[in-house]
Image: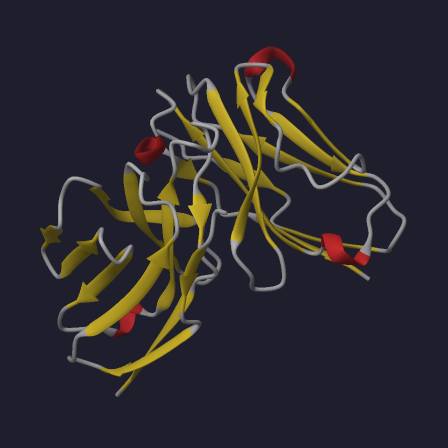
Length: 113
Length: 114
C-alpha cells in the first residue's frame, strides 16, 4: 500500500543541525518531496529529489535518499527559530494516479534557545 | 502573481449543517487539487480537476462531499451534511503543467464541526 511515515516531533537547540527522517513504501516513486508548513500558512515546497539521485543540497538544506531502504531525510544546518514549522515528507508513486502526492503525517520541529 | 486563495480561512459549523469551501487557483492553472488533513494526521488527496473535468476523485471520502469547478476557474467543495469527523484543514493546490513539483498550495481552510 501507499504509506509515508515520519516521527511526529523533533526538538533541537538553535544553531544545531536538525535531521528529519521519513520512510516510504513505493520503491518506484519518481519524486520525493519535503514540504514545510508554518503556522497559519499553506504548504510550501522546500525541495524535491528525483529517485535517481541520492543527495541534493540547497544552501542549509541537504536531502539524502536511500532507495534500498526507502528512507529519505532532510538535514537543516544551523537551525534558526524561523525554521519552526511542520515538515511533511511526500512521494508520488507512479502506480497511483499521476495526479496525487502521498504525504506523511508531518514532523513538528521546535527550536529551543 | 497572486497565489492560490482559499476562503474562508476558518469555519465552525454544527453537525448536520452544510459548508462550502472555495478555492481560487493561480490564473491559467488548469490543474486544481483538493487535499485535507484530519486531526493532525497525514495530508490526504481528495480529488484532481483538469479544467472543469474531474480527472481523479478517488480520494473523496463519501457522497456527502461534492466538488465542482464550473468554467474551469475556481472550485468549490461542499460538505452536506457535515459530520464531526469532517473537521480538519482542507488544502487546495494548483499547477500549470500537472507536474507534481509544480504544485502551489493555498493556506487552507480550517473546518471545525461541533
